Each structure stands twice: as structure tokens, then as C-alpha cells.
Amino acid sequence: MADTHTTAPLPLAAKVLKKILRKIYMRRTLILLAHDLADGHRTIKASSRMDARRFAATDFPACEPHFSHEVEALRDFLAHGYPGFCGFSRNNGEMGAMVWYADTTFTDRFYGCTVDLAEGEVFQMAGEVAEPYRNSPITANLMFMGWDYWIAQGKQRVLTLIQDDNAPSMKFAMSGGFRESGIAYVIHRILGMRVYRKVHYSGERFSHHKKQNRHT
Figure 1 (tube, rainbow, N blue to C red):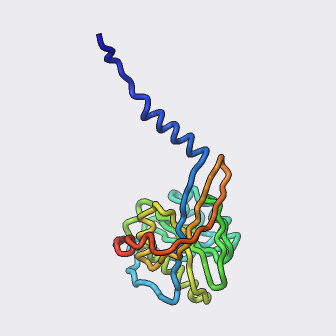
Figure 2 (cartoon, helix red, strand yellow):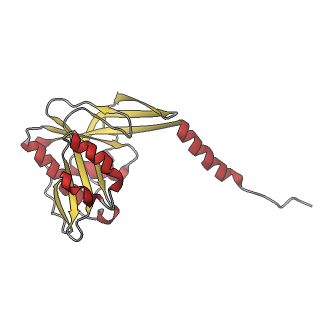
């Protein structure tokens, strides 16, 4: 009589093994994008649901409920003098979107890499939109508000880093005016320790994203 009792432990075992391996080693590639502020930016209609303004210390209560996990980081940003531009709901006052900038050398705590800035450069180092506000122009409103602010400060170039497999963010950034700089940061995390190297490449590896994004 044939044995008809079968189990399928391999898929679960494979998932567990994958998680273990990720704890041991993980590799990420970040693409450095750049935009010359002298090139200006597109004209985007203002969000009908949100007011856009620079974040102030009195705005921390508005971080609930969507950005409560970011409060510590935002306090650190303010302590360093980094300006943030945020969208606040006209209905209930909650913060639903944010973009932050650094005008000095910046070390990303999550990836562990450092972005050095030349004279006249700024780094767009954080941005997030809460789920209820993603289908609105607020992201572009805030980004361009930041660009206008830096133009008034006499800056010439804005940089940002985007993970190479983050297609939505890559499409949005390129539709807004960012272009590849030919520099990538390759991040290695080994047993919790992070190391990175900056590499140069030629050509445009992500040009297919340039005109695909209609959502701003």
C-alpha cells in the first residue's frame, strides 16, 4: 500500500531560512539623484485637503496618528536645524505628509551611509506620505516648497537617495525633475554591522521611469 501521507514543510522552512539569512547578511543599493535648482520645477495644483507649511516645534501633537513613530527622529532634525515641510489636514489638523532637508553632511541612521555635500548643495533626506493622503498632490507641493526655500537661500543643487527597487519613489522623483548622478551607494549589513561603498556608473539605468509617473 502506497504511503499517501505527505507534508509541505519546505515553503515554511524556506521562509524561516530566508529571515535568518537576512539577519546575517543584507545588501541594498541606493541611487543618488540630483536636480539643478536653476532648472525650476513644474507647476502643481495645491492640495484641496491639506495645508502645506514648514514644520515647527509646536506641530508635534499633529504627528498623531500617522507619524508618532517618527517623533524622536523629527526632534533630532529640528535640533540640527534641518527644515521640514509638512502637510496638515484641513479637516482634523493631523500631519499626513512630510519632506525634510539637510544642508550639511548627513549620515542616514537606517542605511548607515554618509552623504557629503559640496558648496551650494542640499540633501532631501526624508520623505513620507501617510496612506490616507497618497492620492493627492501634497507630495509634490511639499517637495517644490522645499526647493523654492533653498533657491531663496542661494542653493544650486538638491540631492536625494532612493533604493533601486523602489519603483514608485523613483518614478515620482524623476517626474519631479530629479535625474541620475551616476553614483550609487551599496550598503552591506553583516551581523548587524553596516558598511557601504560609493560606486560610479555610466549611462542612465532608470530612465524608463522618467515619464511613467502621473501621480504627484
